[in-house]
Image (cartoon, rainbow, N blue to C red; front, top):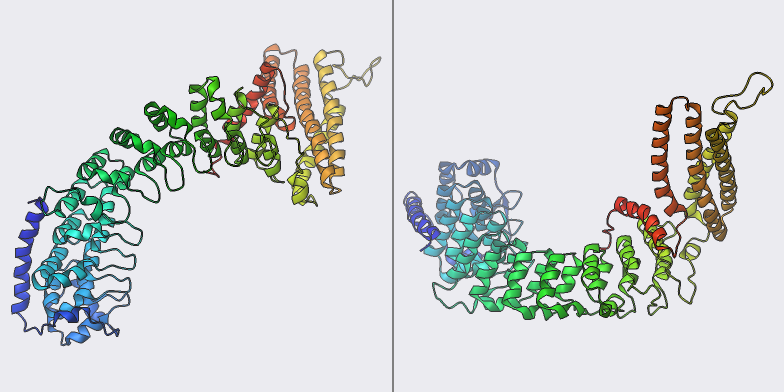
Amino acid sequence: MGRSDVRYDGQKKYISSRMYLAHETRSIDFLNLPTLFSDTGTTVPMSPKTIAAVRAGDETFVRDMTIDVELALSSVNDHGNTMLHLAAAAGHTSLVCYMLYAYPGLLMKSNLMGEVALHIAAGAGHLDVVEALVSYINDKITRAVAKKIYFAKNRNEDNALHVALKRKHVKVASCLVSAEQCLSFVPNKDGFSPLYLAIEAGQADLAKHMWKHSNNGSSSTYCLASKVGGRSIVHGAMKAKRKDLIAAILNEDASLINLRDEGRTCLSFGASIGYYEGVYYLLDKSIDSVYVSNDDGSFPIHMAAKYGHVKILKAILKRCPDALELLDIDGQNILHVAAKNGKAEVIKFILRCYKDKNKEKLINEEDVNGNTPLHLATKNWHPKVVSMLTWDNRVDLETLNHNGLTAIDVAEENMDSSYTFFQRLTWMALISAGAPSGPNPITSTLVTDNPDGGKHKDRINTLLLVATLVATMTFTAGFTLPGGYNGSAPNLGMATLAKKTAFQVFLLFDTLAMYCSIVAVVALIWAHLGDISLIMKAFNLALPLLGFALISMSIAFMAGTYASISHLPFLAFFILGIGLFFLLALLLIIIPYVSPHYTTKLFLRHIFYCPYFLMLLAAGDNRNND
């Protein structure tokens, strides 16, 4: 006998004495048991004095009330709670015992939420009240009627045991388990049985008490799977990340490993949540589960790839190397799944660990729509994954899907007219790798979706403002030269620093910046005409010019400042160092944006990858498609 059973027997004696006292102190007209389930449907508002007295536990007031049984049964507050509900919620055990004998029909009266008094007491965690109700039900009511009370459900289809577990009242739950053996296996509206809730909460002792108690001490445990209703309890143990519970459940009934939850096997669920110890245990119990698909056609290895759990991938592939080539219902391998969901670590693991030429088929494998992993990563705008794939020489950039599109075609077809940073980075990765277009040219969505160019106006205005500011500042700097002008003959009005190299550099780049910005301004003014093709051409011209103007202006400022203080070597070189540092930062940021390009020189591609990599770090991960 467990500790909860000992406590229950002790409380039963105490409660019986309370009920005897309730019986002796008043002559009670008992109702026939069928009356427990008779409901006239009529209710009477409970008086405020009665509500206050019951909540305060004023047993004397309740005993002295001169109301008949029918009035007591129909009196409710604004939430539909009877006197028994209120007494149970407040934890007044003695008052509850009196009401059970005076008005037994209150036992099955439900409030507006469909809750009987047992729900209320269990939810409030009042163990003494629950034990009083259980004692009365077991001692005074037939077994058939008692089951109806225990299995009563609220609007969420929760019984009292569900409610106790949801509120984490373990002792109350244990009492209810001892009272009714089968209560632990009844699912609610969401498919959760009390046993599942106990396991999910990690209550190992309570869970074991539930299934052991249901066997009445018998050693026969083969029937546990037939008793469990609703969601799989092995999945619940996986969710709780309790290997000991998983082991205990499967020791009770090994067939439970075959149950599915929402169409997923136990191993697939464990792989999806990244519970390594649980996955390892299931692999040791049944290696065949690696090859059992979910209802959607995916396998455990696809779940691990989808959610980026590399450690689980390694465990599965170590035991079952051929699982690498498993395909889901869409004909996708784990590279497809990882690429589609932007799991760069999975892509890196596969590309590094499977470098032999025989794996080119896996890397360039097409799904049912002809899409390779590169197509899917591009379509879902995962620039980091696209970049990884384009750097691998085994990846075929020219592969066409069933729509006749290469990866760059997919990017250009799906890019919004007001594209996001992730879309731009993805497109840049393909451009820098020299990804070719397919035989059929893509009609840009920029033209078809937005013929009036309305969405580009803000971008045009922003660039126009920047270009105008650059032109204004560089024009002004040309007439306010560093060092000023000579005030005496023979060089009257000439720049005093004209012969210094730094000054000449200043003048050269200031002039370049001004003219580049002026041309950009004119190009953007043309873009205001609204023709979409003209807008795109204006962008293609203005962006590089404006980028070069900003760089030139930075160089001009650095050179002009250096020329003005060259007589102070320490300060001059310090400012020159600062200028060079930020000029490099500007180059890294602006060049990939204004002029993404492809180069056949590997070392140049590595150089231009540096700013792209910094932008990837700044952008983070694209989680929109996860």
